[in-house]
Length: 221
Image 1 (cartoon, rainbow, N blue to C red):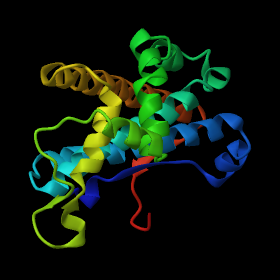
Image 2 (cartoon, helix red, strand yellow):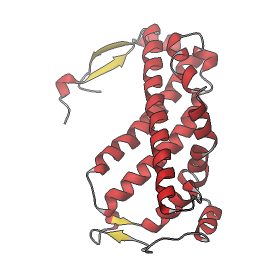
Image 3 (tube, one colour):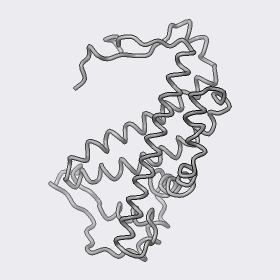
Image 4 (cartoon, rainbow, N blue to C red):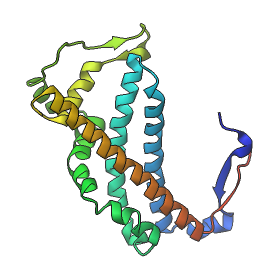
């Protein structure tokens, strides 16, 4: 639990806020900050679920990663619009400027992240279910599992296994399947971490120029 005495906030005066209210750069920062909030929310859930070996914990673990990937896909689209506002800043050039040009980032956005966002996470495409079921070959077939009879404890495991198999494709063997999935996890996690770092550095840099200041958090905030 955090110590309230250690809480801080970044603020601006009323006059200062009025001066940037219609500034498109400020609107762009808010969009970027919204993306970071979404990714961090999923990250926090992912971390907390690691220690939970119940079916519900497995559900949280997989879906937090899946939705983080969908958010990252949208976040990269937002990041691609930032150059027109911040392209002359070192914090952009050394951050998003490099990340967006990276081959791994481009490949992920066009393939894995695109599929996760548009077919599995933000949309529920019937075609990927029927198509994947044709070639699904598992050692056992359980539709749901749970640690108790409460609704929130149920994990519809088969639904997520279909999603995983769609994302992986048809590697040819169990070993190759695990290798492909591990590579997806590693590359996506790396880009996601870099995205958050780039966003934090850019936001900090621009807010400073806009005269936002850091102070101890007020109790009514």
